[in-house]
Length: 70
Image (cartoon, rainbow, N blue to C red; front, side, top):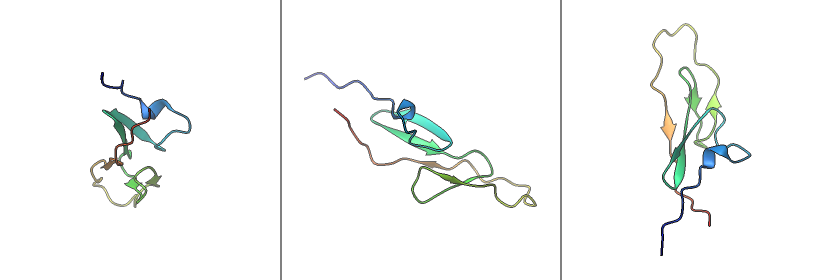
């Protein structure tokens, strides 16, 4: 049995992430741009953090459980 080709979930509609989507083998990862915070759903980012704060948090990457479509 040959392996299934990797499906790029980042190009499907609707998009799985509201900002940054990185295709991975068998899944995808969502990330937020600097100054935004990943929400509990692992797909959406909340608006900018306090503008008076000069240090930005690292980019948050969430990886949902692998979903294989046949």
